[in-house]
Image 1 (cartoon, rainbow, N blue to C red):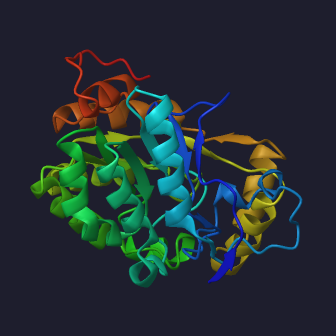
Image 2: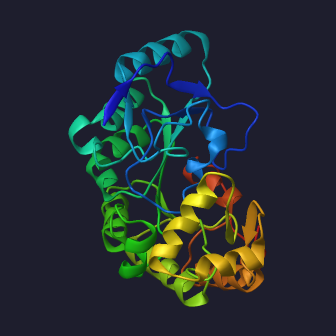
Image 3: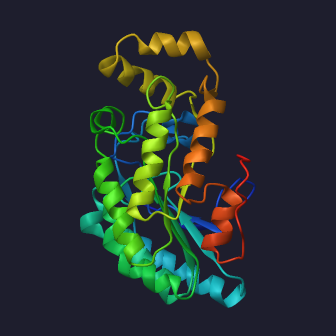
Amino acid sequence: MRYIPAKKIVLPVKNEIDLFGSTHMMNIYRGCDHGCIYCDSRSECYRSGRPEEDFGTVCAKENALFLIEKELQARRRHDTAKKIIGTGSMSDPYNSFEKESELTRGALLLFDKYRCGVCVITKSALVSRDADLFTSISKHSPVNVGITVTTTDETLCREIEPNASAPARRFKAIKTLSEADVFCGVHMNPILPFLTDNEKNIRKIVEEAAAAGSSYVLCYGFGMTLRKGNREYYYENLDKARPGLKEKYMKTYGRKYNVVCENAEELAAAFAGECEKNDLLYRVKDINAAWKKEKTKQKKLFEYE
């Protein structure tokens, strides 16, 4: 890991879709060492004029906690609305260096101090270390911890997410958070065509999520994205683990950005049915209403959105 200069870290959400309605976004780190072969953050459009930078190299922002506190102090003086800070959309806040640096934990301490809500997305079981802070924050502000699980198959996981926590450890983290009364759930995206796009995988993830005490399972599309940068990296690594599969992708999808599984409708129906069977929230509007403590009642009639 290396350190890079930064002027601001907590930025308002503008002109973009945020599934969970966060008012601000935070990225203490740039890059990620989980090594997920499908990661959209490898796309060239996110490099901001830094084509030489390897996304697999983790960069931490200098004076991160000082800058975050300065920004929260300023906003507290000028904004009385509840702030909800999202993190994990571009780089995982619980990369392997977080265990020692504790920058994400330090930010959570500041969110608690300045009474901000938080929404975290991660693939790391390390997130359960901070259960105490999530519990403390939830006493005054909304908290949502989402842990991504794309497969329960340990062997396949090592192929597509080589350095991320094993699926079993992620479910254990859900259990720890749930037992600490932290609102948490499982994110199932992306769904990889010809790899994870089968009903058995979908149903198993939902079953394991329910058993771990998850409040929800989210799948906001049955497919993945492939664009310049991440497409080449994905295909290169597919060739290493599954020779010939790249050609199948190219024949089926060409150079499409939105890659939708051929059996998407069947998967959506299986997903919704399994979530309802296990009494788990799965619609974004119902998940948001629940973690933001708005009253809602999810319809039992199948209506995947």
